[in-house]
Length: 159
Image (cartoon, rainbow, N blue to C red):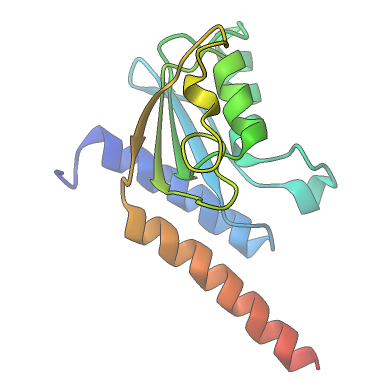
């Protein structure tokens, strides 16, 4: 894929959000929502900062995007996220009518989109979300792995 493709540029924005999360001591996940080529929402995990278990990057980005367009339906929007959405976030993607989600790293343990649960394409739900995986996967994994390595190192230093 071309380094200057819109998909790469938007995933780089999501990665920057993940890096901000890591700097703030949050699990480094970042999300960007795009509609008609324009960014309408971007966020990073803030569960610790806001003391809110629902303050995942995807949820916060959806809230921004719905405010930007003035509608809770995000038809035609694409989310770029560094990690496969959890079940809560996958459900929110369906409810918000996001057209497509593109992520970097898959989460085989907690993934709510295709890995552990298949929420994005459950026939009984009123909307299906198109999925593309593995965009800048190594970069996304490096941010996540680096965060947890630092956390373990700091934990050992405190002992």
